[in-house]
Length: 166
Image (cartoon, rainbow, N blue to C red; front, side, top):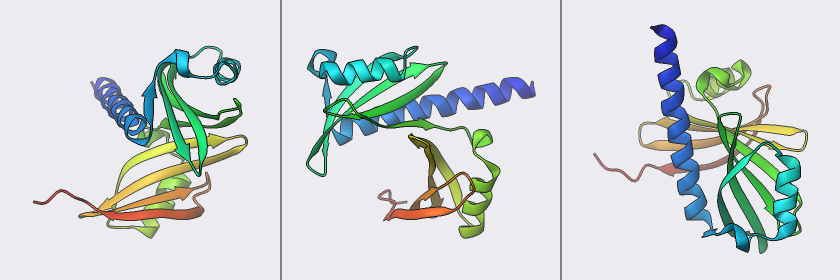
């Protein structure tokens, strides 16, 4: 019974992450067809993730640079890989279930925001560097933190007020 509940929670979290990534892809850039993705980007993607199945493609601009994002699945995970227009791999992002987040990350966030509630954690891997992007809610306030695996804070990304009114 407990395993079924844990499995159901994992599936719900994975689905929520997929929808969040899908929405983020569409809101940050332009959804494009595979045929519009440069061959060198597709080649790099296939080399980097040979077992992956691509689902969505997106093109965006960041700091005047063209970025291609490919949402894909492999090993029952949905992830997003980012490449520059030359096909150079930038990073891969994946949502995480709370039980997979390193204890040091969770403890650090809760020490900094004891009355906050962790709403989302994403693991971002860029070469050998792994960071955890954590969204913490406290009432209507949202904080976005970036930490390393030891729980050290890289930087505070930004703070927002929740736009929903009650």
